[in-house]
Image 1 (tube, rainbow, N blue to C red):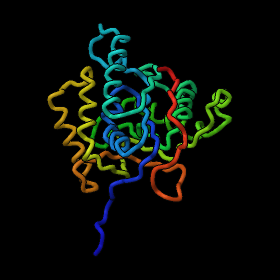
Image 2 (cartoon, one colour):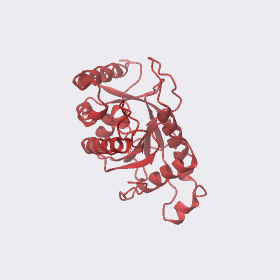
Image 3 (cartoon, rainbow, N blue to C red):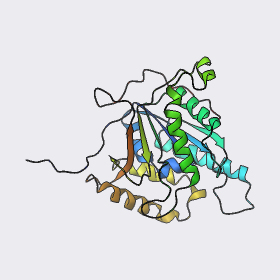
Image 4 (spheres, rainbow, N blue to C red):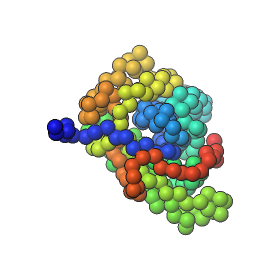
Amino acid sequence: MNEPSGPKAHDWRPKRFMVIAAHPDDADFGPAATAAKWIDAGSAGWLVCCTSGDQGGEDPDLDPMQLALTREDEQRRAADIVGYEGITFLHQPDGALANDLALREQLVRAIRTFRPDAVLTHDPDVTVYAGGGINHTDHRAAGIAAIDAVYPAARNPMAFPKLARDGMAPHRVRRLYLFWPNQPDTWIDVSATLDRKIRALREHPSQLKHPDDLRDRILRSAAETGTAIGAAAAEAFRLVVIDEEEEEGPTEAGLETAAVATGD
């Protein structure tokens, strides 16, 4: 009997992974259900937010610093629901995030400290979404900065040599999962953890214009994505395999979790 053609659910799982996002709530609107699934299966996850979202409001009289504190608190509560081991805020400027050496060094520091097998980040190639809408400039900047930090900087002992002298040895990230892609090639069945994603998103009330519609919108979107693999719900990625492994399965990092000392 012939097997059905078409894509299948992706079942590789990293032992350790890091989500690098531009703003608080990006990781929850993005790959939160995948992160929760991997964590439930035994993976360790860490979240990095490049900015604190101090421009994420519509009231010009609102104090940006107060908004940043609010959004960090919201993200911490959401991260607890997903199950991350910790979260780091890099305090880069919201709305003006740039792929410069300062941001790259912060990301390399985070990667070399937590030592993930996989990094999940924004797809920087998307400027206009296939279904309509513009990809935020900070999303694109965070995505390309994360990619440049992963390869070659994090694995290169000559990149930011002070980090190595301070005990942060080079580290090879094996895979990149780019979320919100226009051309996905990898789908992860998140039917069992989609509720966690919705619960995490509810912890961002400052950003929810239509909270009553949230559940239906997420369920509808995940179901549409899931049709590609015949799943009730899925999240889609563009996968970049940097280092091949002899066997598929969780990688062995062999290191204890360390606090990521990059600004939080």
